[in-house]
Length: 407
Image 1 (cartoon, rainbow, N blue to C red):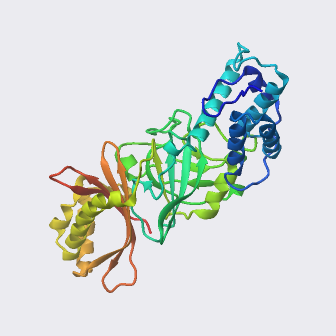
Image 2 (image 1 turned 135 degrees about the vertical axis):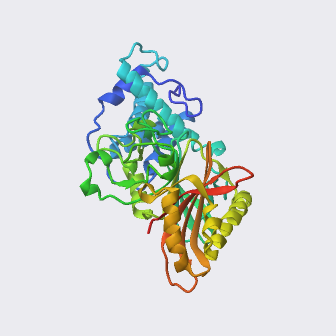
């Protein structure tokens, strides 16, 4: 039998196949399964089809569609297999013209299949032992990291343990209708940058559109605000009852996952200590490759730490940019007055920076997102602070353009 759904060459799909998909029922929610299981079954169907093992592929596709009747891509694979058995289709895409909305759906499904398959190819998988280049340093209190590769439509869940940082799961994910690099309210783009999960919303409090639940992010972050970016309500969330997965570009700016996959995140990650890196393309590097930038930045941070310990206001202020902004739009002059009141209380006690996190973001600027507990010598605890540093060039080095207490 001729293979109609070639996994490796991504041929065009038939109009009849699409029509069959659109006519199949998809109103019922899929029963809960382990995260990633439905995608693994789909990829097995496509692999068997490509290998000419149509009977086995058909059996597995029928099982997958029974379990997930709202999984359109699975229905499309099943439909092609059924049509191939009848011999009704001579060539894929031969039945034209098709309605424009059907063509748009078909193109989205083609792209989804290509993204899912590409993510499984060795050339696109993270090399063993590698981490996203943004993870310069993580404390043990940051147990997990989420990283999104928008080009691959892929979300990676990483675990931080005594053995280091490693990928423990990865999932297909959708981003904004108009792509990435969000700038203004309502632009239907997903932001790029380093963010943090701020809370875990109870699905009972949400519209069914958001599926299994939602993890809001701190967009706009201080770098976004400095650049004048607007908007709010950027979440990681699930899918509505009539969709197992959404098209690669389908949201108003959020990142959407299949509900079984999101449920793994909901059970795993912790608000405030889970960074979320959203990049056009993730750069995976070995941890040793991050040592030079870590050492360079540590030197700047230690110099700031020493200046604050000394209590010398002018020496400390040299670490802050003229466009510095703190919480509640604090200006550099406001910050000067705040430090002037704070430094005498320091009384020359050495500062300890506990649970230090360094997250490096590079685009038109070179930014380091720094989180730590600031504890004065002899004290048992202190505030949790977050700073945003910008590299101002070889002469000026690293400077702080935001600082605030977050806990």
